[in-house]
Image 1 (cartoon, rainbow, N blue to C red):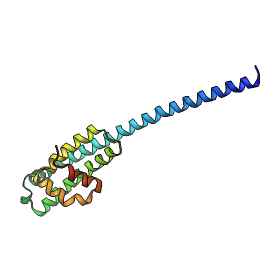
Image 2: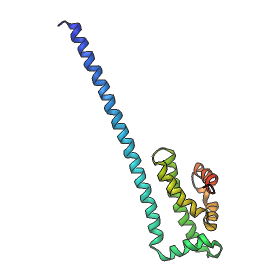
Image 3: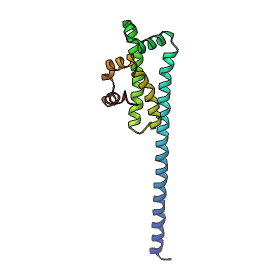
Length: 153
């Protein structure tokens, strides 16, 4: 065997190694992307659960929340502030989910499910009033999207 043949075999082995390395990296990147989506989805669900838990574990918060959605005019000032803070906490969670969905980190089905829940709250008299008082405190992209989609089915 001459040196040219040995060199050709070496180049072939080197090329094969490069192709295998690229294929391996592609698989790793894909798995990493799936892991990122899984982590974002789980964190979002956890945030929603935390908000629900904070409201449902406090009788006064449940009363204020319910009354605020149905008859916001009957709330005293301190109750309205509490109601707005509850709604704002929910808005922050759905805003994060929205932005992660826009960035490809949350599956469409997860975002749409969370949005339907938030939409049902924002469509109440008190939810809509609270949104209008607080919408300037969220990301502009999210604010515009909510205003465009709040009444869409």
